[in-house]
Length: 220
Image 1 (cartoon, rainbow, N blue to C red):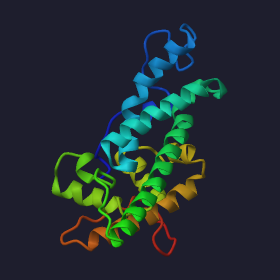
Image 2 (image 1 turned 120 degrees about the vertical axis):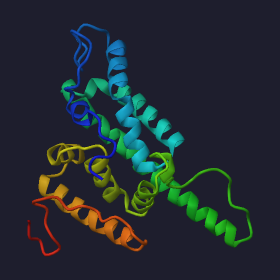
Image 3 (image 1 turned 90 degrees about the horizontal axis):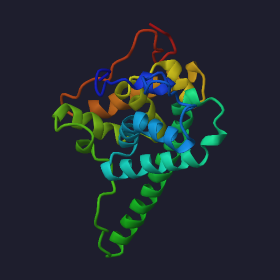
Image 4 (image 1 turned 90 degrees about the vertical axis):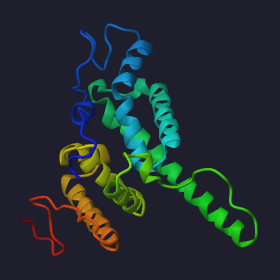
């Protein structure tokens, strides 16, 4: 699972990905709008893929990532360290995604109530869609369906670690928590994912990395 979706996420994350000559995240040789357009081009794919992993719907992911960039532009002058744009931007993106997921659950609960009262369910996609994220593959579909059953924060750490390939330090910066919290959250996320997968016949087992705590709190 750790090799899925591998790209230069780490470089994008800390602002070290290559940019046009003479232009950094601060865009000192360009106007604010032109500089921000370069940042969007640099980070748009990663933002979309993260949003897609969190909400599981292509159209929603595109809309949420675009909205996140719009809000980032509105408040870009408040960012003191332009070279660390993406960790700051990620907070905007994840808040939008989590808010969207909360609203989606409310709509789903409302549609279930309407169905019980004899009203038809609304049309349209309003669920986590595993086949929207990866090529049709039985194993991948099974993993994504299981991830869709995790709570938001546990799905998030699985996504960042195994699908976006962030280090523990990068995750702790993005989530504003210490490395121990990241390690613990990731451990329980893997445990939950494993339990869900084990309910299905021949499901793969979520890996445990060296040094990760076991149920008793011991590390290997």
